[in-house]
Image 1 (spheres, each protein chain N blue to C red):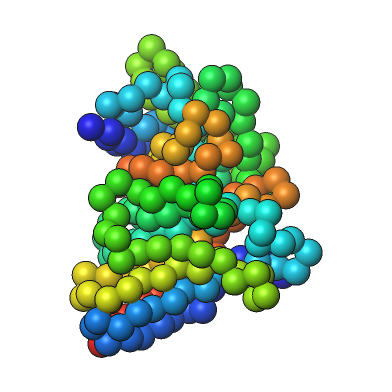
Image 2 (image 1 turned 120 degrees about the horizontal axis):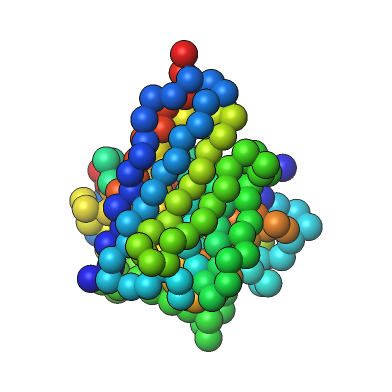
Length: 115
Length: 121
């Protein structure tokens, strides 16, 4: 079972809100983990967006717009990246990451399309 | 301004070796945790190895342990990845990434542009 599971794609119109999920495998609780979020556009390296464990353990990357935020869904055992007011420039792949047991692990990524 | 410039990527035959280097500027690599992350063409991200800030303790992904060695040269402010016994599945763009904090537990922040390693005969 993969440590982190992300939906492969998500589409939404400009101006909408997009909620990207990153579900942790059974046996580990999202409450105990920092979840990292990265954005990657074609031909470019990933860009650090956010690090989130709780509202008191929260770090946003330099220059990341305020429309990007993070939270957790404890009932779903998932980290959440929320993009409010989607813009065309938000079209990209989004990856989550955390430390599991003895390795840094990434989710498979979600491709966000702004229709 | 933080900059990371990877080099050393090339075409290499299975079983061969390659040494990647990452030249850092704008900060001291001896202080920060650093990591290598790779991305096979058209696929997702895979963590490879990291080195802690302040000491030289290293961690490796199971897929590369015993074949890859990560080190840093503080006099040159460079990070190296020695890759031996290369396999086709090691084909990827290799990114050098700066830690968010001094220790590895802070996670990973600024990424270089990457260097392509192709393992094929």
